[in-house]
Length: 103
Image (cartoon, rainbow, N blue to C red; front, side, top):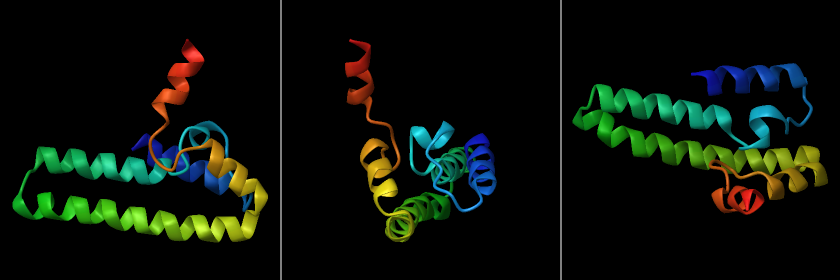
């Protein structure tokens, strides 16, 4: 729930600027990750055939929405967004990149 709340708050505070700090430094979509974790957890808690079938559909729809939003962001922010996109994963952080920094 905190990913959703803090992600929304950062976007709200940015007032139309590209957000690439805090949560958005590690993933371009912390709110969607938060929603998927919440719904996945609810699916585990109240497992039914319907919720089991719906969760992958929800995940796929979020993935498609992200692709649309990224095209819009690239059109709006241009090179700034392209640099951010190269440096920050769409959903899950690049574990290898972080492991290389630790070694």
